[in-house]
Image (cartoon, helix red, strand yellow):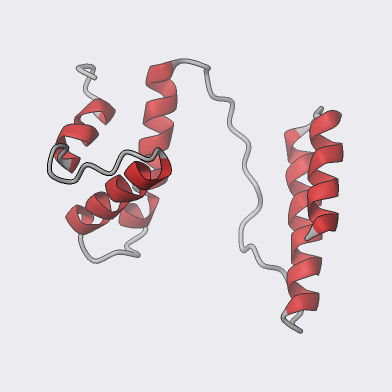
Length: 118
């Protein structure tokens, strides 16, 4: 694992090409995982895709919502409501704001609307 962290540090220090960074990161992690768990082969099915994201709050909120709702779109969770509640609680834990009785997930998700009213 230390080797992976060293590679990440070196690549971030000279961050020129994100695709190269991801290639080396995935390769090092695959080697480590294969050795640790006595397995072989790749860990990722698809290739890395790089998309430029504008540095605006609205754009970053939409990207965060897109990432959080990926399991719903892929059909990996049974219901979107349960998944949204879980994601909301994880975000509350992440930011140290565990107020289940005050905040409701639907109010938090209102900020991620895509119809122009966000």
